[in-house]
Amino acid sequence: MNWKVLDTIEGIDQVIEESGNKPLVIYKHSTTCGVSAMAKMRLERNWDLDEDLDVYYLDLLSHRDVSNKVAETFQVRHESPQILLVKDGTVIFHTSHLGVSVDAIKDALSEVA
Image (tube, rainbow, N blue to C red; front, side, top):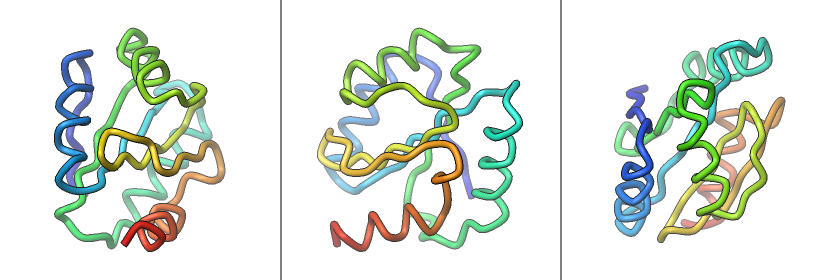
């Protein structure tokens, strides 16, 4: 699993542009939350998706402005931990807390394939 860091507001534009070619994932993480740490560890441990699927990591405590802009841009209520599956500049799936899993991403991807 190769994390790409999302740490600027300009990076959101890049995410939108890249999502026109293929779906991608944004993972919003709180470095002080046990549930978030567990979700990140589960993603990393169970990751068996195509390495071509880009996964963006957003440390929402260090980059609150970016996190807020993600919520505004994609019209998805902020939660943590949270995954957003983005395709063609639109969130096609999102979940948070204990719903964050590789299987959830796989299920969402199978619906858009």
